[in-house]
Length: 120
Image (cartoon, rainbow, N blue to C red):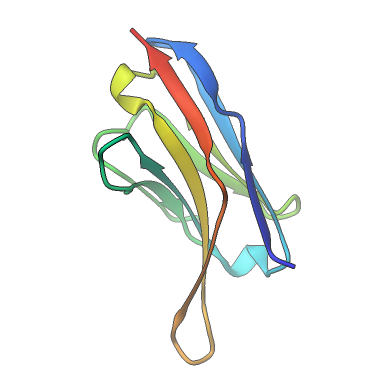
């Protein structure tokens, strides 16, 4: 059974930090690209950060230098360290796991989301 479970959200003041965790099971975590997305009210879901199975990372321009994505293959868990938080970072944050199947198609699993709220 595939599970993707986010945690670590909460309420923090401007300039504060949060560390999100994405604990997984039921698939080959070490082969997956792990990503964090976010969705603010009235806005589309957007990619925040991603880390490939080989450890390559990429970030949205709005979070570069403030957020860090990482992974622990032994724990089958991905993380998003968020520093210097701003009110515009307020959103529901979702973890995504993606594998490429033998046929070349994408297999995706999503978590239920964790809310991060930054007060000004």
